[in-house]
Every structure is written in C-alpha cells, then in structure tokens.
Length: 351
Image 1 (cartoon, rainbow, N blue to C red):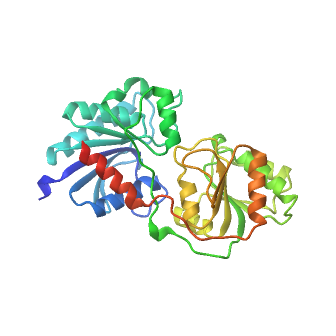
Image 2: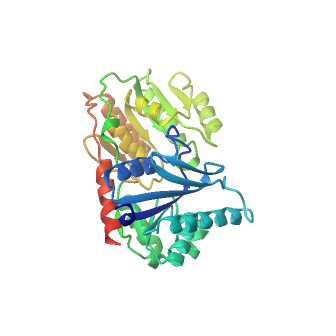
Image 3: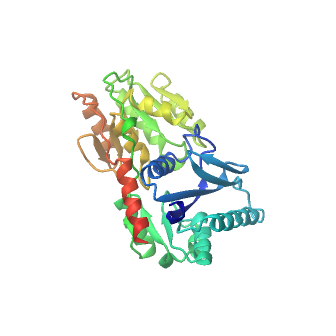
C-alpha cells in the first residue's frame, strides 16, 4: 500500500533540471535512480535549494523534485529561499508524512534539515560530500551533530570527521558505479588524462609539471585535461611556458557520457587533487579500464590498477612504470551502485 511506504525527504543544494542534466552531482542522481527502482517500499522526494536556478516542481525519473531556485543568492535574500524550502517541506509532509530527512553536505542543507527534523520529530541523516569540515563552513556552529546520523564516503573522510569533531560517523557508504558504465577498449588514444574542476585544490599545475618530466622519456606523450574553472588561464600559460602545446589538450567541460567515453580511450588517469572526500572520478576511471595514479585521498589505495603517490617523484615513477609495462585495460568496479543502495536501505530501516 502506498500509505505504508517510508518517505525519505532529500535536501540537496542542487539536482538535475531534467533527465539529460547528467553532470549535476552524478553520484547522487545515480544513487537515487537505483534506490527508487530497487526498493519500492520507499517513497523519495527531493528539495533542491539552489539549482535549478528557478522555482519549480517537476518529475525526474518518477521522483518528485521541488526546486527553490535559490541560485546561491546572498543574504538577506537567501532567507526567502529558506522560507520556500520550509513551505515545500510542510506541503510534502501534509500530503505524505515524511519518515526521515536526508541532507547532503554538512552545511546549509544539514542546518535546514535539522530544523525540519526537529519540527516534525523525524530522524535526520546527513551525507558528507566534500570539504564541509574546513574552517570556512560556519554552518557547523549551528548544527547539533548529536542529533544527526552522519554518513561518510571513505575511511579517510571518517577519520577526518573524527579528528575535527571528536565524534564518530554512523556509517561509511561509498558511492557506487553502474555496471553498464564499464568500458572495454584496448585502443587507447591518450596516455594520460586529468578530470576535474580547474581550481587550486585540484592541483593541475602539478599535472602539467609531471607531463613535462614524462616528456623527457616519452617525447610524444599525449595528454588531455577535462574541466573548467578559475585556474584555466594559469594552466594554459604553464602549458605554453613548458612547450607542451602538442602534448596537453585542454578539452573544457564535457558531459559525463563523453567523459566516460574519453576515459575508455585513455591509459592512465592522473589525479593530483590535494583532497577528495571520495574521489568519484577514480572509480569512474577504473570502470573504464584506466590505470589510476593519484594522491593519498578519498578511497585511494594501492592495487594492481591504482597507485598512490605522496609527491611528484612518486607520480612520475608510477607513470613511467605503467607506460613501460604490458597494459591490462580490463574494467574494474571498486563499488557497485546496488551495494550503495543496500547500505542506505539498511540505514533507513534502522531509524
């Protein structure tokens, strides 16, 4: 019976505006799509605070989405967006009582989720998604962590949460990959690929320096960077300065399907990011048959396809070793999406 379903209210800063908007928080939308299809005893409703940047209600793969259209507006106008969220939550609860509120990012949505949890006397789960534990997140001062079940994405993130707050997370649940996203391809056009926002924390300056040093051994090294951001011109200038215009292509933003296809045509994902809560691009690359050479971040660990590096010399050593070895481009899925859904179901059932 519909009335007997458990009702999960998801709060997120953004959500896809339609079925083709695959670049908007892929890990979250893939999870919700799989969970909804797998467990019909649950009803899912989503409130998206800032994106899409217009106030709307629409259906996304049979899931009701309420968009507040906040578009990251500054205070005091932001309070109007919060009011819209609370009004939507009230309407949703009246139509079908909410069993649990599940917020994403331990920030604004966690704060708002805590208020909804208190008002309707329902449990609150929060999933840490990024860099919420840094000092610039002032929302942490207003969130009672004793009242929230905290989900971390990796053991490293769980350790950081413990170090920053003195509290243990409730559960670690990694993001899963769909099995149909595996790529099997022996022809690899690019030797090295980088994927991510071109911002300081992703450390693409080191990416360029590494390719420069690899070029001394492999003069025709072919690399590409997918992404855009504030560091784009700085990275472009570094490429020119190091005479790498014929070795590194800046491909800009691509939709996720094209990124996965590109990974399926690449030998090595070089991931120089200084911090990742999980590192979804690492999992995607492994599923596409890439080797991964990365920093000690997120879920990264040394395996036969993944190599963790502590400094530039270790990055270079691992890459040279891979380029000189017999390749194995068989895809690997470190975490399957059905496992993610099962773990969240267990958590929902417990509360």
